[in-house]
Image (cartoon, rainbow, N blue to C red; front, side, top):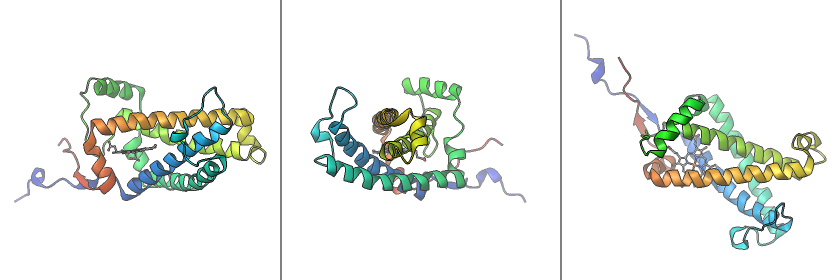
Length: 213
Ligand code: HEM
């Protein structure tokens, strides 16, 4: 007698692996420190005709803000390297964040705006894939342009790619703005679908979806 394969339980998989969860929260904390201390550093020599309010900044004064910025920089850079190497080696990027096609993004964006986009735990829609991949690239750009601003003589070639020291400052500011913009949209989406939050903190597994016979 043969067993009915359809009655066999489907395998379970982690919603978010421990490495993704750990690097996600370290990244979020490091970015919070980087951005708020960066605003204080910006205030000492603004690029544009505005200042960030003091209460939104970290460090108290320029030297304090620089100390916070450089301390968090190492945490951000090492953590980012761990996340990217893990994402490539484990297949997480290939499996969960790729591919992203313009047609898929357009389709899912229309469905999301009409509140008709279902959310399956641990499965990202095309808009999420675009946002997550995009913010990881923006963080890489923020680190690269930050290095060019920090060491414009030693890293001349890198600074030259961004149009020199002033260009690198502008790129650094734009990367920061993109990350802050991502953060606002990301938090809004978590508030709209709050059940995505516990698995990002606590982990957990889900059954693989039913595959067609
Ligand atoms: C600037 C700070 C942040 C960045 C750059 C960021 C970035 C990301 C990225 C790249 C992912 C996908 C991770 C992967 O699967 O590889 C993700 C997922 C997620 N993040 Fe964040 N995040 C930030 C802050 C936060 C905060 C503060 C919260 C909570 C309030 C949060 C909640 C989540 C949740 C719940 C998911 C999973 C979404 C789902 O399963 O659909 N994130 N985030």
